Image 1 (cartoon, rainbow over the protein chains, first blue to last red):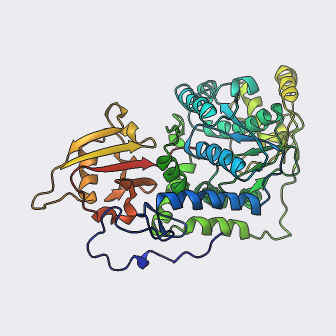
Image 2: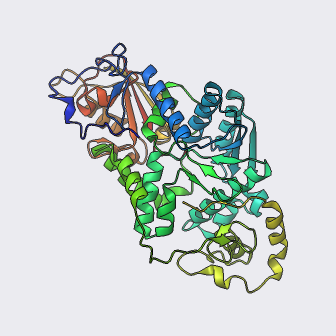
Image 3: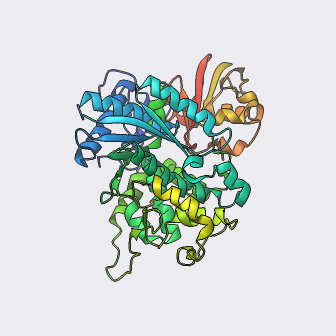
Length: 369
Length: 100
């Protein structure tokens, strides 16, 4: 991306009287009052110039990484939150402006969390009308036979986020397959990716560490997934949504206060305050990790039951589902290799298994968490 | 000093009735003529925030990840904590910490 950032913020010079709001001019046009300081470059730019550089950088990312081909049917993973709302808006705009020739639609997952998704799904429904993009909603209940509320009842609040994360990944794939999409795009931004790099280092998960910075994953499967916001700062996404008055929904998942990710998130934000470039630097470090060729990496195969990519006999979702359906919800949580031992009794699961196999046409992807 | 404060991105959930827009009267600190952002943050934390103040402030500033705009201008361009507010200014706080 652009490497022109001055390091640190000393460039501000002596700050005698604190300058009043809007008293500085945009460094790009030199005419209008600056409205924000870009974290990536520390430039002060006005609103109009911000829209231009923000959209252009995403366009450049799309072109340089050949994210799409003309004629492709692309599912936008839409949660109603800020990232996917801005993604849907910008992508439909760029598709028109630069004639990408994409057939775009919104794909939402209903986890079945009372009071959380109800409102955010309403937002996605409004986006459907506002941006003229068709919407398809798939639910955990339909796909797995369980809502997140049911799962929390069975397992409690300790490991529920594991279920939700694993199930959500496959839900997008299954929904996309059902709707005959060629590609899935998600709103993961630079902050999210930096956070994931850190988490994978903390967990010592070398396999995921080497995948999590890829802009496109699952290229060997039927439905690749890509992240056009890989280099886009969260601050700019939120500023863009605010200035453009985009309609997005923000609430915390009611089950998330226990999430481990929150610690990494807070750490990244602390780093950003001291040195905004840190976010891109962490992504860069993640990309540059070289794994010794003598390290044995888990082999990627496919799940024996549903066909999803898995390094074990059964994919994580099938192991977790197994545990739930057998009344042993802790199965597949933690360090035990549940994949190997989980295949001992078959009969009770047969019904569900059959349905899972039927509904899964697409397999692909790794979990980059 | 008359100010309009706006809370978004989930921060409104920390306030009474989850109200987003608050028209308020903020007194300058003793012996000072104006209200600074530093003073405003203390006032908001003490007078408006009903729960989990740690979602809003950390140390003497906003929690990292909370964006602040003064009259629709990034507060990082206005002097941050030292920015001096004027009558009828609009200050917006937006959390970026909620899922997307």
